[in-house]
Length: 243
Image 1: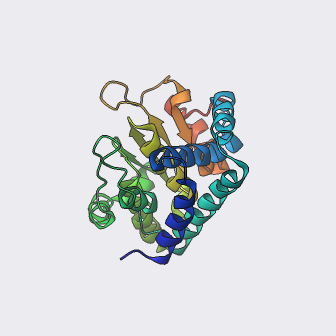
Image 2: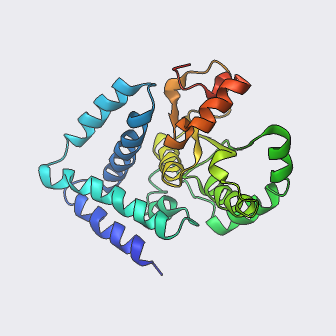
């Protein structure tokens, strides 16, 4: 059964599909929403992303243009009501976009939550030893595994009076831009520090001195604590292009 947040989102989304394919509307919504976060805080590839945003929004009439911010607001409220979910992944499958998009199917959130609870058993030890903990998903999809990890880490660290946003770095990669940006959007809205790389993990993995134009950095990644941490560790893979 669909909850009210999903129903509300789908109601607005389907208005945009009058005269437009649902896949194109979804792709455009995800891309423009991602640009609206990235271009506020990140300098890498700003001009190209801004131009692509303008080209995308200009395809729609005045009425439809106003609906995209409403969709982003509904996504924001859905994750605020319940951060324990892969909301975009759920919508993606509800719209039957998986078959259109190379047969993708996202791992259920509850499965990701169980795996995260197991994988993060040594979280506090790592933080005490290194100062922070990194969580990577090389095939992140819409981000269910990283989202579940964020919620598990939040519960563990809150018991120690620590804010998970200051201690966990979330990194993901996906070959598909749309689903990778779905992950990026949800991590950004959940206040996670990190980034998503859009590229083939097998042939073009994350590495030092990488092409940062393939990266999408979350707003929280630019907080003071992570700027200082990057400087201390001198990790080139974490550079935001202004250091």
